[in-house]
Every structure is written in structure tokens, then in C-alpha cells.
Length: 390
Image 1 (cartoon, one colour):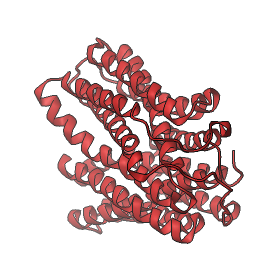
Image 2 (cartoon, one colour):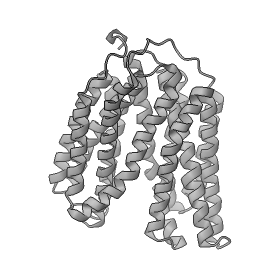
Image 3 (cartoon, helix red, strand yellow):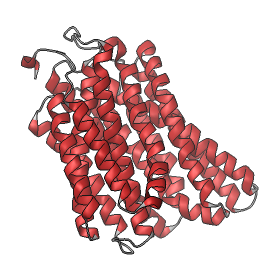
Image 4 (cartoon, one colour):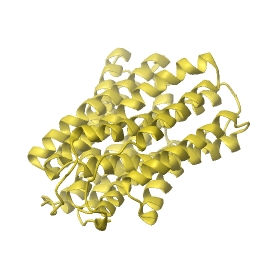
């Protein structure tokens, strides 16, 4: 693993842990503030839009100024967002702030400021993986580690939040800025200006990367649908009973971490092979999900889905990174992040509409989306670097 990457992976892990930590307490807080479900949904939508829109902009800035300034700027926002959120919650709960003003400030700090900041951290991590590696194998493994750090933060965040909330509902909120400060200090101390390693000339036209981006888009969309439909099934007690939802979602998160953090380094497959294998594995998982009769089978189905999506998404991101030179690693990292971010904005809305048609409809559409990704995975992207570099 390139020397500059581990501290950035720590920052990614901690920022996504903070994101999930804050998300886990939003439901109880909404009840405390008397906020309707529509306003809570708006908060998640604003955060998703902020992250998606900011990602390519951070990428352009990174190409101009380098990864370290983008990381530092992003982490400053990641500290300011949770700190402002904690202050707003404190003043709102003691009624110093009115409900409407408190909600606007929560949208600003938790939605916009933190959403823009976490986009910078992820974009910088992906770009750094591209700037500090040359061969196909090294690049793919580095990008897999970035995804695994992100997935581990998403997996551990709710567990940490639950443990802290057992002592006090507001404890996860007050601890979040502290965790963000720790990540910022790690980056400031350990991440120095990066000199790109020597890389092979790129022999791919930008248009040849479109199939890979399409595959990444449809795979991410399928997973966004699958995660949300599980929540709907639990809410309606449809095949998932009370108290089982956490275990089901844990299976999905564990699958992503295993795929990107363990299988990608061990298998040493090329990006196109990861896509060609990962997407069909996800299709098989969705087929099982559509007919799963119980929470246990649903957990297995989501684990299979997550393994396939984790392999395929890593293949997509590595293909995109290898398809451009070092001068455009920031932009392509921003576009990769944008691609995934858009699906997690569209996915929940689409799932709600499909679930009203039929409870099995979201799983079938997710499977169809993964099937489209499978077809796109077999569209050639042209040569990138010699296979001897693997």
C-alpha cells in the first residue's frame, strides 16, 4: 500500500463513522423537535445533493492544487458541520431556538456543510490512490482499500452510536466533532504534498469509459434500492420481524467490506474481471432476495449482493482511474463519487414508488439494474496499461 494512503484511509473511515453516527440519532431527534417525516427525508436528500454536486468541483480543485489542500479543506468542513449541528441541537432542545430556525440550521450544518466536507475526503482518497500507484494491480487494490474504509465506517457507525446513545441520546452528537478533529490531526501530521508516481501512457479515449461509468451507475442504483426496500419490509413486518433489521443491514455492510478490503487484494483480478464477475454475482443475490421467505434468507441474499456490488464497484472505479493520466485523477475521482451519490438520492424515492406497486417490485428492478450493469461490463474499454503491470 502506498505510504501516503493509510492516514487518508483512517480519515475516510472516521468521517463515514461520524456520518452514520449522526444519521442514527436523527430519528429520535426529529421526534424531540416535533419534525414530520417529510422534513427528516429532506435532510437526507439535501446531504446527498450537497455531496454529489460538490464531488466533481473538489476533483477539479484537487487537479489544480493537489490532494492535501482538498483534504484539509474538507476536514475543516467535517469538523464545522458536526460542531454546528451539536450546537443547534443543544439550543433547540432547550428551546432557545425555535423549531423552524433549528431545522434550517440542521439542514445547513448536517446537510450542506458536512455533505460538502465528506465529499472532499472521499474524492481526495480516491485521487490519492490513483496518484500514488502505477500498475493495474496496485491501483485496483488501493481503490479497494478506499471503498473498504468507507464501508467499515458505515458498518461501525450505527454500532458506536447505539452504544453511546445507551448512556445519552446526545452523546453521539457531541462526540462526532471530536472524532472529526482526530481525523484532521492525523491528516495534517502524516499527509505531505504528493509527488505522482511515474505512470504508463493512457491509451483510452474518454468516451470509452462510458460503459464502465454506466455499469457503476446501475450497480450503485441496484444497491441503493436493495438497502431501502429492506427498511420498507421491516416497517410493514413483511418477512422481517421487529429487531431483525439491524442484522439484515449488517450483512449488507459486511459484504461490502469483505469484497473490497479482503477479496480484491487476495484475488488480484483486473478491473474488467472484477466488473464482469461482480455484476452477475449481484444479479444472483437479487434473484434470491426477490423470493427470500425470511429475514435469515434475506440476510444471505444481501450478503451475496454486497459481495458482487463491492467487487463490481471497485472494478468500475479502478477502470475510471486507469483511464486517465495523473493530471485528471481528481476529476475522475469526483465523477466516480458523483455517480454513486446520485443513485443514493434517486434510489430511496424510486423504491418507495415501486413498493407501493408490489413488495417484490424493488428487488426485481434492482436485479434488472444489476443485469444492465452486467451487459455494460462486457463492453470493451480498450487497452489501459500492459498486463505485466498487474
